[in-house]
Amino acid sequence: MTIPDPKFWIGDEVYHVTPDSPKGIVLDVLYSCRTNLFDYLVTFSSERESLLYSELELSNHKNFI
Image (cartoon, rainbow, N blue to C red; front, side):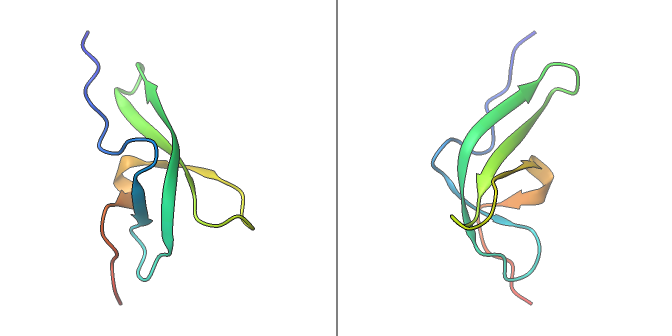
């Protein structure tokens, strides 16, 4: 089995798909052999905890209202 390349890499700037999301930074990339999908540990602020997001929840551009 070949592991595909992730959509985002550590250090990439990302946005949540919700409108007007703040800019976040990818801290870690996790791959699941079971699901064949990537999850991304992202921080959006030093005051909020970092959370895992699926590839479908993130974008490399901001979505506006």
